[in-house]
Length: 385
Image (tube, rainbow, N blue to C red):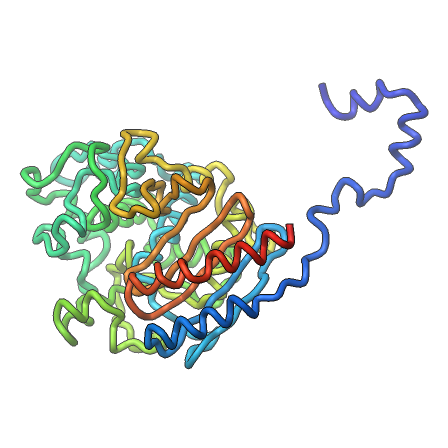
Protein backbone atom coordinates (compact mmCIF):
# COMPACT_ATOMS: atom_id res chain seq x y z
CA UNK A 1 0.00 0.00 0.00
CA UNK A 2 1.41 3.40 -0.95
CA UNK A 3 2.28 6.08 1.59
CA UNK A 4 -0.28 8.44 0.05
CA UNK A 5 -3.06 5.85 0.36
CA UNK A 6 -2.18 5.20 3.99
CA UNK A 7 -2.33 8.94 4.71
CA UNK A 8 -5.78 9.17 3.17
CA UNK A 9 -7.01 6.55 5.61
CA UNK A 10 -5.80 8.40 8.74
CA UNK A 11 -8.37 10.30 10.81
CA UNK A 12 -8.42 14.05 10.15
CA UNK A 13 -7.21 14.89 13.65
CA UNK A 14 -4.07 12.77 13.24
CA UNK A 15 -3.37 14.31 9.83
CA UNK A 16 -3.59 17.78 11.33
CA UNK A 17 -1.05 16.83 13.99
CA UNK A 18 1.30 15.30 11.43
CA UNK A 19 1.17 18.29 9.12
CA UNK A 20 1.86 20.63 12.03
CA UNK A 21 5.18 18.93 12.84
CA UNK A 22 8.40 20.67 11.68
CA UNK A 23 9.39 19.40 8.25
CA UNK A 24 12.96 18.73 9.33
CA UNK A 25 11.86 16.20 11.94
CA UNK A 26 11.94 13.42 9.33
CA UNK A 27 15.09 14.58 7.59
CA UNK A 28 17.52 15.78 10.19
CA UNK A 29 19.91 12.85 9.82
CA UNK A 30 22.43 12.26 12.57
CA UNK A 31 22.60 15.85 13.79
CA UNK A 32 25.59 18.22 13.82
CA UNK A 33 29.12 16.91 13.64
CA UNK A 34 30.54 16.55 17.13
CA UNK A 35 33.68 18.34 18.24
CA UNK A 36 36.19 15.54 18.69
CA UNK A 37 39.70 15.74 20.08
CA UNK A 38 42.24 13.78 18.02
CA UNK A 39 45.26 14.92 20.03
CA UNK A 40 45.87 11.39 21.34
CA UNK A 41 45.74 9.99 17.81
CA UNK A 42 48.19 12.61 16.52
CA UNK A 43 50.54 12.01 19.45
CA UNK A 44 50.48 8.28 18.76
CA UNK A 45 51.32 8.88 15.09
CA UNK A 46 54.20 11.21 15.95
CA UNK A 47 55.61 8.69 18.42
CA UNK A 48 55.17 5.93 15.84
CA UNK A 49 57.33 7.79 13.32
CA UNK A 50 60.10 8.20 15.86
CA UNK A 51 59.95 4.58 16.98
CA UNK A 52 60.00 3.23 13.42
CA UNK A 53 62.48 5.81 12.12
CA UNK A 54 60.17 7.10 9.42
CA UNK A 55 60.40 10.57 7.89
CA UNK A 56 56.71 11.26 7.56
CA UNK A 57 53.14 10.07 7.17
CA UNK A 58 49.63 11.36 6.66
CA UNK A 59 46.28 10.21 7.99
CA UNK A 60 42.61 10.93 7.46
CA UNK A 61 39.56 9.87 9.48
CA UNK A 62 36.13 9.99 7.82
CA UNK A 63 32.66 9.23 9.11
CA UNK A 64 29.57 8.15 7.20
CA UNK A 65 27.37 10.83 8.81
CA UNK A 66 29.87 13.58 9.64
CA UNK A 67 32.24 13.53 6.67
CA UNK A 68 35.93 14.29 7.20
CA UNK A 69 36.56 14.29 10.94
CA UNK A 70 40.32 14.72 10.95
CA UNK A 71 43.28 14.84 8.61
CA UNK A 72 46.86 15.52 9.51
CA UNK A 73 50.35 15.21 8.07
CA UNK A 74 53.30 14.25 10.24
CA UNK A 75 57.06 14.69 10.00
CA UNK A 76 58.25 15.86 6.60
CA UNK A 77 55.08 14.91 4.72
CA UNK A 78 52.22 17.23 3.79
CA UNK A 79 48.55 16.58 3.09
CA UNK A 80 49.21 17.39 -0.57
CA UNK A 81 51.92 14.75 -0.92
CA UNK A 82 51.22 12.10 -3.56
CA UNK A 83 52.17 8.57 -2.52
CA UNK A 84 52.23 5.20 -4.21
CA UNK A 85 49.71 2.76 -2.74
CA UNK A 86 50.93 -0.72 -3.75
CA UNK A 87 48.16 -3.21 -2.88
CA UNK A 88 45.99 -0.52 -1.31
CA UNK A 89 45.14 0.06 -4.98
CA UNK A 90 42.98 -3.06 -4.99
CA UNK A 91 39.72 -1.58 -3.72
CA UNK A 92 40.16 1.26 -6.21
CA UNK A 93 40.58 -1.22 -9.04
CA UNK A 94 37.61 -3.29 -7.96
CA UNK A 95 35.55 -0.10 -7.82
CA UNK A 96 36.36 0.62 -11.47
CA UNK A 97 35.19 -2.86 -12.45
CA UNK A 98 32.10 -2.77 -10.22
CA UNK A 99 31.02 0.47 -11.88
CA UNK A 100 31.10 -1.35 -15.21
CA UNK A 101 29.05 -4.12 -13.62
CA UNK A 102 26.50 -1.54 -12.44
CA UNK A 103 26.38 -0.17 -15.98
CA UNK A 104 25.70 -3.63 -17.42
CA UNK A 105 29.01 -3.72 -19.31
CA UNK A 106 30.41 -6.63 -17.26
CA UNK A 107 28.97 -9.55 -15.30
CA UNK A 108 31.02 -10.67 -12.31
CA UNK A 109 29.74 -14.24 -12.54
CA UNK A 110 30.16 -14.94 -16.24
CA UNK A 111 33.29 -16.82 -17.42
CA UNK A 112 35.80 -14.26 -18.64
CA UNK A 113 35.93 -16.12 -21.95
CA UNK A 114 32.66 -14.26 -22.61
CA UNK A 115 34.74 -11.12 -23.11
CA UNK A 116 37.74 -12.73 -24.82
CA UNK A 117 36.29 -14.56 -27.80
CA UNK A 118 39.25 -13.62 -30.01
CA UNK A 119 41.86 -15.04 -27.65
CA UNK A 120 43.31 -18.54 -27.74
CA UNK A 121 42.08 -21.06 -25.20
CA UNK A 122 39.16 -20.89 -22.80
CA UNK A 123 39.29 -19.59 -19.24
CA UNK A 124 36.29 -20.67 -17.21
CA UNK A 125 36.87 -18.55 -14.11
CA UNK A 126 35.00 -15.31 -13.45
CA UNK A 127 35.79 -11.75 -12.47
CA UNK A 128 34.39 -12.44 -9.00
CA UNK A 129 36.89 -15.26 -8.62
CA UNK A 130 39.80 -13.14 -9.86
CA UNK A 131 38.95 -10.17 -7.64
CA UNK A 132 38.74 -12.42 -4.60
CA UNK A 133 42.11 -14.03 -5.39
CA UNK A 134 40.34 -17.31 -6.07
CA UNK A 135 40.71 -17.84 -9.83
CA UNK A 136 43.29 -20.59 -9.32
CA UNK A 137 46.10 -18.77 -11.16
CA UNK A 138 49.59 -18.52 -9.68
CA UNK A 139 49.62 -15.75 -7.07
CA UNK A 140 52.32 -13.53 -5.61
CA UNK A 141 52.83 -15.71 -2.56
CA UNK A 142 53.11 -18.83 -4.72
CA UNK A 143 55.69 -17.35 -7.09
CA UNK A 144 56.03 -13.57 -7.52
CA UNK A 145 58.32 -13.99 -10.53
CA UNK A 146 56.26 -16.63 -12.34
CA UNK A 147 57.54 -16.34 -15.90
CA UNK A 148 54.24 -16.54 -17.84
CA UNK A 149 52.87 -13.55 -15.90
CA UNK A 150 55.95 -11.31 -15.77
CA UNK A 151 54.36 -8.71 -18.03
CA UNK A 152 52.37 -7.55 -14.99
CA UNK A 153 55.50 -5.70 -13.80
CA UNK A 154 56.43 -4.05 -17.11
CA UNK A 155 55.58 -0.48 -17.99
CA UNK A 156 56.21 -1.37 -21.65
CA UNK A 157 53.46 -2.83 -23.80
CA UNK A 158 49.78 -2.42 -23.03
CA UNK A 159 47.33 -3.79 -20.52
CA UNK A 160 45.58 -5.52 -23.40
CA UNK A 161 48.72 -7.28 -24.59
CA UNK A 162 49.63 -8.31 -21.04
CA UNK A 163 46.12 -9.64 -20.49
CA UNK A 164 46.43 -11.68 -23.66
CA UNK A 165 49.73 -13.21 -22.49
CA UNK A 166 48.23 -14.21 -19.14
CA UNK A 167 45.00 -15.51 -20.67
CA UNK A 168 46.90 -17.63 -23.22
CA UNK A 169 49.69 -18.67 -20.83
CA UNK A 170 50.82 -22.30 -20.69
CA UNK A 171 50.18 -22.52 -16.95
CA UNK A 172 47.88 -25.53 -16.58
CA UNK A 173 50.42 -27.49 -14.56
CA UNK A 174 50.64 -24.72 -11.98
CA UNK A 175 47.00 -23.67 -11.58
CA UNK A 176 44.25 -25.11 -9.41
CA UNK A 177 40.48 -25.17 -9.96
CA UNK A 178 38.73 -21.87 -9.20
CA UNK A 179 37.27 -21.39 -5.73
CA UNK A 180 39.43 -24.05 -4.12
CA UNK A 181 42.38 -21.99 -2.82
CA UNK A 182 43.10 -18.41 -1.82
CA UNK A 183 46.05 -17.37 -4.01
CA UNK A 184 46.80 -13.74 -3.34
CA UNK A 185 47.55 -11.26 -6.12
CA UNK A 186 49.44 -11.79 -9.33
CA UNK A 187 48.40 -12.13 -12.95
CA UNK A 188 44.68 -12.53 -12.23
CA UNK A 189 44.49 -8.81 -11.39
CA UNK A 190 46.22 -7.70 -14.58
CA UNK A 191 43.93 -9.98 -16.55
CA UNK A 192 40.86 -8.53 -14.81
CA UNK A 193 41.93 -5.01 -15.75
CA UNK A 194 42.43 -6.01 -19.36
CA UNK A 195 38.93 -7.52 -19.45
CA UNK A 196 37.56 -4.19 -18.19
CA UNK A 197 39.32 -2.39 -21.03
CA UNK A 198 38.13 -4.89 -23.65
CA UNK A 199 34.49 -4.82 -22.54
CA UNK A 200 34.26 -1.04 -22.12
CA UNK A 201 36.34 0.05 -25.10
CA UNK A 202 38.20 2.51 -22.86
CA UNK A 203 41.69 2.53 -21.40
CA UNK A 204 42.27 1.89 -17.72
CA UNK A 205 43.35 5.51 -17.29
CA UNK A 206 40.08 6.69 -18.82
CA UNK A 207 38.07 4.36 -16.61
CA UNK A 208 39.83 5.58 -13.45
CA UNK A 209 39.28 9.19 -14.49
CA UNK A 210 35.57 8.61 -15.13
CA UNK A 211 35.00 6.50 -12.03
CA UNK A 212 36.70 8.62 -9.38
CA UNK A 213 38.37 11.81 -10.55
CA UNK A 214 35.46 13.22 -12.55
CA UNK A 215 32.61 11.78 -10.50
CA UNK A 216 34.00 12.57 -7.04
CA UNK A 217 35.97 15.65 -8.15
CA UNK A 218 39.30 14.33 -6.89
CA UNK A 219 42.58 16.16 -7.31
CA UNK A 220 44.88 13.22 -8.02
CA UNK A 221 44.17 9.54 -8.48
CA UNK A 222 45.87 7.57 -11.23
CA UNK A 223 47.95 4.46 -11.95
CA UNK A 224 51.50 3.70 -13.00
CA UNK A 225 53.69 0.59 -13.14
CA UNK A 226 56.67 1.33 -10.95
CA UNK A 227 58.05 -2.15 -10.46
CA UNK A 228 60.43 -2.46 -13.43
CA UNK A 229 61.98 0.94 -12.70
CA UNK A 230 62.38 0.10 -9.02
CA UNK A 231 64.01 -3.22 -9.93
CA UNK A 232 66.40 -1.48 -12.32
CA UNK A 233 67.39 0.91 -9.55
CA UNK A 234 68.11 -1.72 -6.91
CA UNK A 235 67.10 -5.26 -7.77
CA UNK A 236 64.51 -7.42 -6.01
CA UNK A 237 64.79 -5.67 -2.64
CA UNK A 238 64.13 -2.29 -4.24
CA UNK A 239 61.19 -3.68 -6.19
CA UNK A 240 59.60 -4.94 -2.98
CA UNK A 241 60.08 -1.70 -1.05
CA UNK A 242 58.91 1.85 -1.58
CA UNK A 243 60.60 3.08 -4.80
CA UNK A 244 63.55 5.31 -3.97
CA UNK A 245 63.16 7.25 -7.22
CA UNK A 246 59.70 8.56 -6.26
CA UNK A 247 59.31 11.43 -3.82
CA UNK A 248 55.84 12.64 -4.66
CA UNK A 249 56.69 14.10 -8.09
CA UNK A 250 54.53 12.25 -10.61
CA UNK A 251 56.61 13.54 -13.52
CA UNK A 252 59.31 10.97 -12.69
CA UNK A 253 56.92 8.02 -12.91
CA UNK A 254 57.29 5.97 -16.09
CA UNK A 255 54.59 6.56 -18.67
CA UNK A 256 52.73 3.34 -19.23
CA UNK A 257 49.76 1.87 -21.03
CA UNK A 258 50.19 -1.25 -18.87
CA UNK A 259 49.41 0.07 -15.38
CA UNK A 260 49.67 -2.32 -12.45
CA UNK A 261 46.05 -3.07 -11.57
CA UNK A 262 46.78 -4.52 -8.16
CA UNK A 263 49.59 -2.22 -7.10
CA UNK A 264 50.08 0.84 -9.30
CA UNK A 265 47.72 3.40 -7.80
CA UNK A 266 48.86 6.76 -6.45
CA UNK A 267 46.99 9.58 -4.75
CA UNK A 268 46.88 11.90 -1.73
CA UNK A 269 45.53 10.94 1.67
CA UNK A 270 42.58 13.29 1.22
CA UNK A 271 41.52 11.81 -2.11
CA UNK A 272 41.78 8.28 -0.74
CA UNK A 273 39.69 9.42 2.21
CA UNK A 274 37.00 10.57 -0.22
CA UNK A 275 36.89 7.06 -1.70
CA UNK A 276 36.53 5.55 1.78
CA UNK A 277 33.72 7.97 2.53
CA UNK A 278 32.02 6.96 -0.71
CA UNK A 279 32.08 3.32 0.43
CA UNK A 280 30.64 4.24 3.83
CA UNK A 281 27.84 6.16 2.11
CA UNK A 282 26.70 3.30 -0.07
CA UNK A 283 28.53 4.37 -3.21
CA UNK A 284 27.82 8.12 -3.16
CA UNK A 285 30.54 10.81 -3.18
CA UNK A 286 30.53 13.88 -0.93
CA UNK A 287 29.21 15.94 -3.84
CA UNK A 288 26.16 13.69 -4.11
CA UNK A 289 27.29 11.88 -7.26
CA UNK A 290 26.96 8.11 -7.27
CA UNK A 291 29.98 5.96 -8.14
CA UNK A 292 28.68 2.52 -7.17
CA UNK A 293 25.37 0.93 -6.34
CA UNK A 294 24.76 -0.08 -2.74
CA UNK A 295 24.68 -3.68 -3.91
CA UNK A 296 28.18 -3.38 -5.37
CA UNK A 297 29.53 -1.79 -2.19
CA UNK A 298 28.03 -4.57 -0.07
CA UNK A 299 29.32 -7.27 -2.38
CA UNK A 300 32.84 -5.92 -2.20
CA UNK A 301 32.78 -6.06 1.61
CA UNK A 302 31.18 -9.51 1.95
CA UNK A 303 33.47 -12.42 2.88
CA UNK A 304 33.24 -14.15 -0.48
CA UNK A 305 35.90 -16.80 0.09
CA UNK A 306 34.30 -17.88 3.35
CA UNK A 307 30.80 -17.98 1.91
CA UNK A 308 31.63 -19.70 -1.37
CA UNK A 309 34.24 -22.31 -0.48
CA UNK A 310 35.17 -21.94 3.18
CA UNK A 311 38.45 -20.30 2.25
CA UNK A 312 40.86 -18.54 4.59
CA UNK A 313 43.49 -15.93 3.80
CA UNK A 314 47.10 -15.76 4.93
CA UNK A 315 46.28 -12.88 7.31
CA UNK A 316 45.21 -13.93 10.83
CA UNK A 317 43.73 -10.48 11.49
CA UNK A 318 41.61 -10.62 8.34
CA UNK A 319 41.00 -14.30 7.52
CA UNK A 320 38.15 -13.44 5.16
CA UNK A 321 38.32 -11.78 1.76
CA UNK A 322 35.71 -10.06 -0.35
CA UNK A 323 36.40 -8.23 -3.61
CA UNK A 324 39.52 -6.20 -2.87
CA UNK A 325 38.81 -6.03 0.88
CA UNK A 326 40.41 -8.20 3.55
CA UNK A 327 37.57 -9.06 5.93
CA UNK A 328 37.66 -9.54 9.70
CA UNK A 329 35.67 -12.47 11.06
CA UNK A 330 35.99 -11.32 14.68
CA UNK A 331 34.84 -7.73 14.18
CA UNK A 332 31.70 -7.52 12.03
CA UNK A 333 31.94 -4.78 9.44
CA UNK A 334 35.71 -4.28 9.67
CA UNK A 335 37.51 -4.53 6.31
CA UNK A 336 40.97 -3.38 5.21
CA UNK A 337 43.17 -3.08 2.13
CA UNK A 338 46.75 -3.03 3.38
CA UNK A 339 49.59 -2.21 0.99
CA UNK A 340 53.15 -3.44 0.70
CA UNK A 341 54.43 0.13 1.11
CA UNK A 342 52.76 0.51 4.51
CA UNK A 343 49.55 2.23 3.43
CA UNK A 344 46.76 1.07 5.75
CA UNK A 345 43.16 1.91 4.90
CA UNK A 346 40.29 0.33 6.79
CA UNK A 347 36.57 0.70 7.37
CA UNK A 348 34.51 -0.06 10.43
CA UNK A 349 31.06 -0.15 8.90
CA UNK A 350 29.34 -0.83 12.22
CA UNK A 351 30.83 2.31 13.77
CA UNK A 352 30.51 4.18 10.50
CA UNK A 353 34.10 5.37 10.13
CA UNK A 354 37.06 4.86 7.83
CA UNK A 355 40.77 5.62 8.09
CA UNK A 356 43.72 5.88 5.76
CA UNK A 357 47.19 5.96 7.29
CA UNK A 358 49.45 6.69 4.36
CA UNK A 359 53.03 5.55 4.93
CA UNK A 360 55.98 5.11 2.58
CA UNK A 361 57.55 2.20 4.37
CA UNK A 362 56.94 -1.56 4.74
CA UNK A 363 53.75 -3.61 5.19
CA UNK A 364 54.68 -4.41 8.77
CA UNK A 365 54.72 -0.68 9.53
CA UNK A 366 51.17 -0.29 8.26
CA UNK A 367 49.88 -3.08 10.46
CA UNK A 368 51.81 -1.69 13.44
CA UNK A 369 50.35 1.79 12.89
CA UNK A 370 46.86 0.33 12.79
CA UNK A 371 47.44 -1.66 15.99
CA UNK A 372 48.56 1.48 17.81
CA UNK A 373 45.90 3.87 16.55
CA UNK A 374 42.75 1.77 16.12
CA UNK A 375 41.94 1.52 19.87
CA UNK A 376 42.50 5.26 20.23
CA UNK A 377 40.12 6.06 17.39
CA UNK A 378 37.50 3.68 18.70
CA UNK A 379 37.59 5.36 22.10
CA UNK A 380 37.23 8.81 20.51
CA UNK A 381 34.36 7.79 18.26
CA UNK A 382 32.53 5.61 20.77
CA UNK A 383 32.39 8.54 23.17
CA UNK A 384 30.63 10.61 20.50
CA UNK A 385 27.96 7.99 19.75
